[in-house]
Image 1 (cartoon, one colour):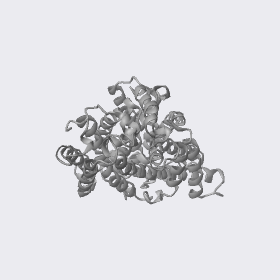
Image 2 (cartoon, rainbow, N blue to C red):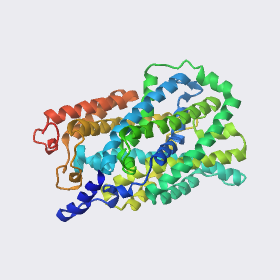
Image 3 (cartoon, helix red, strand yellow):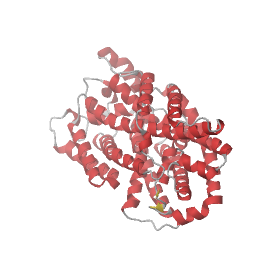
Length: 464
């Protein structure tokens, strides 16, 4: 288990050569892994009940017309959630067994230098999502202050800066803060959403039925495109599954960990997508915060619901959008973890999140997801092929930390396979994730076998 690995990395190797990583990137000791099964599940519920997922549901309705009807939406969502859970469970195993984070896991396939490129491809989307979630949260915070001040205050940019400052401070406390924020947020937000769901059914059922439930929809390319959008929304998270599983207590079986992903994602993701689509059908507004204000039409209830939205924005950022890019920044710049989370928060301020979603349409968010997931599908395919097929789940993980060890430099097969996969994905971007995933996985397997005969990355694989 990870205890032996930690001993090797932290005790033996420093006597031989310097390990140029921050302590936060070294393997987690078993004694430091304090997140149990229940808090872990609540963490994913808290991550799922966010305005980004709600906006994806709202994106099904554009200019009063539904792309998919309610049945097609649910079928697309359950297919996506099933795939998400399987890949999560497969890709989290390396981090769970070793305590190693994603940015170090990448070295196994891409090499120490090559992993920098693939790390950025995970970190940049997370920073943009961080900014987007904060902007949506700031919109809700502005609604609160506007009501409480009697309309005297109305400035989303100021609320954006304030909320970002709060999140930076919270993120300095690491996963200990995340665990408690997520547990609180998941319970509170789900209760608020049940209230909103009931309100929509009671007051807007006719409009929802007309626009969404009875829509003709399609089982064609747009149906599969939405599966890819749903998948792409989680692509960055399950790619860096090791960042989360390394915090989970040891002794949990692979099957149980699979359930720890599937159950909360079904509960949270499915419910929030539904409410997003219902609100867009009822109001014609794709921005969930503004749609809430129209549906509720009560300043005091608006304050309460908006408060839950703010908590939700903080909750999802704490899980999905702060830790992974902070690890990337720490790896590249050699900054300490706390300094890295501050830099991450400041970069999110500059991400122009208001461009992704307009009142009338959330298509910009969908396109953003499809574009970045075209790169992330190939990366996760390469990691899975590497670990399960080429190395048969046997990796000398201490070598991942040695600058002149077996994984030094870059692996041309992995980089080329990633580019081939991404290129194929852009041929049909609407279903680019699955195209890139399959193409990159096959390309990497073939390149590892037939190309670059003298590559040191063949050592320890079935092609050695």
